[in-house]
Each structure stands twice: as structure tokens, then as C-alpha cells.
Amino acid sequence: MGSLFSSGKIQCSHILVKDQQLAQKLLANISAGADFAEQARAHSECPSKAKGGDLGKFSKGQMVVEFDRAAFGLEVGQLSALVKTKFGYHIIKRTS
View 1 (cartoon, rainbow, N blue to C red):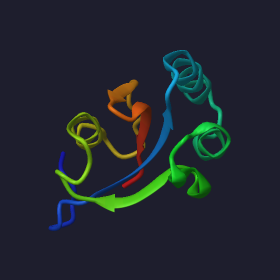
View 2 (view 1 turned 180 degrees about the horizontal axis):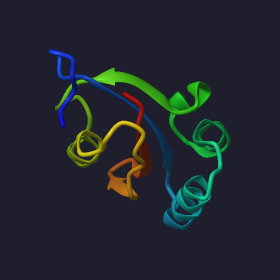
View 3 (view 1 turned 45 degrees about the vertical axis):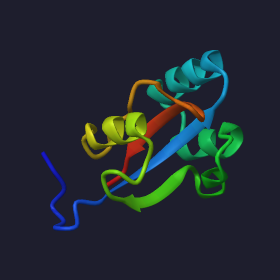
């Protein structure tokens, strides 16, 4: 289902790391119940880590293609698999 907002914007948080093994470990920890925002603040290499990984609202086409495709494919509250982009490995959580 798409967004209920006419703007078509969604909101996500993410964790970005360069190391695939670390990304897999973080994804496993979060899937097992670790707090996403705490993991983002502790490990993410993106400036959004200061806000627990929150990227705010964005529209299709604002993020790199791989990230965009994964984020817009998530339901609210859902966690992505690892998403590889030119920046590294992302774990994305759709928040609205």
C-alpha cells in the first residue's frame, strides 16, 4: 500500500556502515529485539545517527536508487534486508 499522504512522502530511519559483516550483525541484533535508534547512534556512519538514524520525510527519487527501491517497498514498521549502495550497507526501517 502507498502512503496516505498526497505528497507521496515516507519517513525512514537507517543505519549505514561500510563493513558487510558488521551490517549483518546489527541486522541480526535488531531483528532479535535490539533498539534500532540505539544501534544507529552507536554504529552508523551517517550524520543521521545523532537522531537515531531518522532521515525525516522524503519523496521517491531523493535517495540513491537502491535505497529508494528498498525504502518504498517497506510497510510502516518493517525492517529491510541489507541494502548495498555506493555509500556502504544500509539497514532501513520505515517509520511512516
